[in-house]
Structure formats: structure tokens, C-alpha cells
Image 1 (cartoon, rainbow, N blue to C red):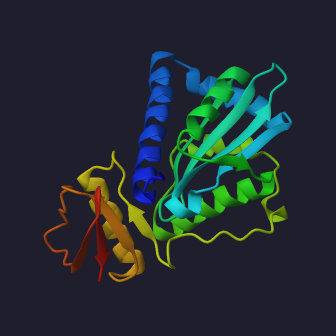
Image 2: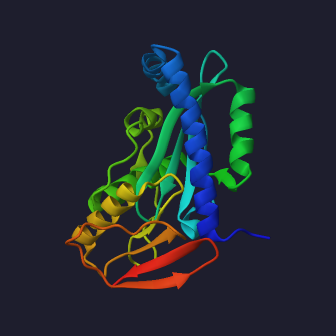
Length: 237
């Protein structure tokens, strides 16, 4: 039985957060790892492309992973993972790792638990990632801080060679789905940013059931509630 798109998006966000937390812990435990990563990605950029993959359900659930990898001379796979929120926030998570081939396949197997990863043309992978980042930036949201390092894996891939057009948001508007690790303060800030950029009727959002709804005292909104299994959809307007 297929998961509800909102449940699936939250599940993917949780798994991505756990994966990135592991990378962060290793960086804290091994001084110089980040600098080493920067040196390794310089080598990876010069290596031939291995493959590019994208989650096929991305524009149905609002979130999905894009993988860009290169086959390094030492036998490892240099790979960047980009978790995209194509409904609103753009590049939600991004990181680069040099992996053995076995480790790389294990990562893909983990992604396959929740996503259908299929090959995508390198030009379209880059265009999708960069267009998602640009869409979110226009709304007032920057990418994951590690995006600047991770995106270097794309090297000289020419996004202009992709003829596909990607449409972001949902039904013509940004649609923010709060993740399991989003604090009330962050949710509040995101909704305020969307309100300034799009107007009170220009976007939709979903919060988990029981989540605080604590805007600043001077903020006034009319809210329409639609109860769902695990979340409450709140429509601005």
C-alpha cells in the first residue's frame, strides 16, 4: 500500500536528517575532515561521471533526492546527494562523500527504501537542482550551507543542454510541508517569509497535528483547517 505523499515526504526528511547527522558527527570527531572533503572533491570533479539519479516521485510528494556521482581514479565513487523540496524550500539537504563502491551501493539501497531512483541525464540533474535552488531563493530561502561544496561535483555539466522544464510549487503556489525537525520558531519564520513574498493568499502549508501555531503578536491570519491522518493542512487566506 502506497504511503500518503505528506507522510512519505516527512519520512524522507527524517532519513536525510539522520544521514547528514552521521556525516556531521564524523566531521566533529575527525579534525580536518571537511578540509579533506574539499580536497577530495577537487579530484572528483576531474573524474568521469559515474551516474546521475533522481527520485521519480519528487513532484508528486514534493520532496526527493538527486544523486550526482563520479568514478574516481582510486576506485572510489565521489558522490553528492541533494534532497530537494520542490514545493517550497529548494535544496533542503546537500552533502558530498567519497565512498567505496560497496558503500555507494548501500547508500542507494537505503534511498530505495522510500524512493524510486532512476537515471537522469546529467544536464537535467544539474538543471533540476539549480532551478529548485533558484525557486526557493526567489521566495526568500537559501540552500543548505553544505550545498556550495556539494554542488561542485557537477563540474562542467552544461544545464542548458537539458530541454526539460521543471515546475515548482504545487497548483501554482508554494506549498510548505513542515518537517519532523522543524522547530516552532523555524516554522514561524518560514510562514512569515512566505507571507511577505507571496501575500496571505499566495501559498499553502501543512503542520503536524499538535504543532504550536505561535506567530508574533502583531501577525493576523485567517486559517482554514483540514484534518488529515498525521497532519493539519492550513491554508492562508
